[in-house]
Image (cartoon, rainbow over all chains, first blue to last red; front, side, top):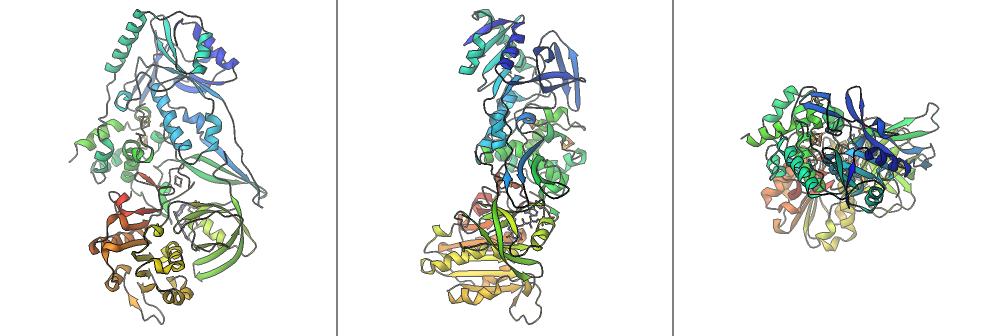
Length: 356
Length: 269
Ligand SMILES: Cc1cc2nc3c(=O)[nH]c(=O)nc-3n(C[C@H](O)[C@H](O)[C@H](O)COP(=O)(O)OP(=O)(O)OC[C@H]3O[C@@H](n4cnc5c(N)ncnc54)[C@H](O)[C@@H]3O)c2cc1C
Ligand code: SF4
Ligand code: SF4
Ligand code: FES
C-alpha cells in the first residue's frame, strides 16, 4: 500500500503510534547532536536540520528538508540491548528471579542501516540460544524508516547493501518529497496505520521525483568499501603491518564499539547488597579494546592495541560472516565520525587490501 | 522463554585436594542433563561470579569438576566444603567426538590441567574398550605433583590404556621421562590412516602436538583440540570467547584442526 501524504500528517503519524500504546523513539536535537530518544509528541522530533559529518567531526545545521539528516551517536541498540540490563536476582540459597522488562517500541525516523542493524542483532540474540531480555524489548516493534536523501560524508551503506534507500522489512518506509511524503506500508500493521493518514494515490511524477532523489543520494556517497570476497581476503592479512600502524594512532578508547549499532559484547557483573542478602547479576556493554576483555589467567590474549584493532575490524568485515552469515557492518559511519583521532574504518580496509 | 542465565543448585558433596593449587569437587546437581566428554559448565559462586570449568568425569551420580586456583572466583571455590552450595549451568559446548571413531586408534594428549578435559574421554573409552584399537594417553606436567588423578593410572593401564608420562622438572623420586609431552610421540605406534588425535592443554603445547600429528600423517579433520578463551555467558551472546570466526563457547571448545587451521597459532588472536 502506498500513499502520498501532506507534510503536516507526520504529526498525526506519531500521535497514532502513541495512541496504539507504543513507546515512540525518534531522533531529537539535543545540545547540537541528534539522538534517538523516547518522545511524547511530534514536536520533539528533530526537523529542518542536516548534519555535517566527517572523520572525528559532527555538526548540525539548518536545512529546508525536514529529515535531511542521518543519525547521531546512539542507535537502536541503546533501546533493545541497553548499556545495562539486570539478568538475575539471586539469594544466598540460590533461589532466583528473572527480571524481564517488556516494552513495545515504535522506532520513528530510522534509516536503512538501522533496519539492517535490527536484523543483525536479531541473529545474535535470537538466532541461537534465545535471549529473553532482548526479546522482551524487541517483540512487537513497529518501524517507520526513512529513505536517506542526504547521506553524511561518513556513510557507506551502499557498499554493504543496506541503504541509502531502505532494503528489507519495515512497517512503513517514507521518502520525503519536495512538499509531501511518499509512504509505503509493507506489513499489515503498517497498512493499518497508513490507512488512517490523509493522502492520495501516488502519481508518476512522485515516483520520478523519488527516483531522482535516490540517484542524488547514491552519487553523494563519498566513501565505499569493496566487499567482494572481503571476509576471506582479510583473513590473509592477519599478520599485516597495517595493524601496527593503526595502533600508533588508536587510543583504544572503545568509542567506535560504543556507537556501533551492531557491537553487542557485554560483561556480567554481580552487584551484592551490603548485608549480603541478595545479589543482582547484570550485564553491561563491554568492548574488545579493553585489555581485560580477553584476559585468561591474568594474561590478556590481545595484549597489543594492534591485535585489538584487528579484532574489531575483522569482526565487522570477516569473522561476522562465519559467525552469523553476513557482514557485521551496516555502513552507518558512526565509528568514523565519533573516533576522537579520526580513524576511518573504510580507509583501513582499503589499506589492508592493497597491502602486500 | 527461559533465561539462559538461570542456575541449577549444586550441593558440594566432597572436595578432594589433587595438589597444592588444584582441587576436585563432587557436586550433587538435581536432574543434571546428559553430557559428553569435553563439555563444560559455568560454576557460580554467590555474589562473586561465574567461571567456565570442564566436566572432568563421565560419572552420573555426581558432577565432577577439577579446579585450579588462579584468581577471585576460584579462590572462593577453594574455600568451600561439603554441604556448601554453588550455582551450576550447563553442559555447554562441543565435545570430543569419540563415538564417531569406533575401530580407530586413539592418541590422547594432555598438558597439566588439560587432563581434566581428557579424563572423560578415557572413561568413555574404557566403558567400551573393545570398540577401539590402540589407545594412548600422553600426559605432561611441569612437575610430578602436576600429574593429576595419579591413583587412577593403575586402573587405566589395566583397562588397556597405554599411559605415557613426562614432566618438565623431575622432583623427589621421579624416575620417569623428563621433557615436553611431544617427546612421548616417539613411543607411539599407530596406523596414522586410522588414528584420531585429541588434546587439551596450554596453547603452545597444542600447537606442537598438532604439528606432531600432521608429521605422522594424521588427517587434519581427525585432530581435535580444546581451545580456551575468556567467557562470560557460554551461550554465544557476550562476545568474549571469540576466536576468529568462531565462538569458543558454542562452536567449541573442541574443534577439529581443519576448522581453525587458518587462525590457530596466530599471535594474539
Ligand atoms: C572451556 C573452558 C574450560 C575450562 N576448564 C577448566 C577446568 O576444568 N579447571 C580449571 O581450573 N579451569 C578451567 N578453565 C579456566 C577457568 O575458567 C579460569 O581459570 C577461571 O575462570 C579463572 O577465574 P578466577 O575468577 O579465579 O580468576 P581471575 O583471574 O580472578 O578472574 C578472571 C575472571 O575472568 C573471567 N574468565 C572467564 N573465562 C576465563 C578464563 N578462561 N580464564 C580466566 N578467567 C576467565 C571470570 O569471570 C573470572 O572471574 C576453563 C576455561 C574454559 C574456557
Ligand atoms: S563498524 Fe562503523 S560503519 Fe560499520 S556498523 Fe559499526 S559503527 Fe557503523
Ligand atoms: S578506532 Fe578510534 S574510536 Fe575506536 S578505539 Fe581506536 S581511537 Fe577509539
Ligand atoms: S562466552 Fe559469551 S559468547 Fe562465548
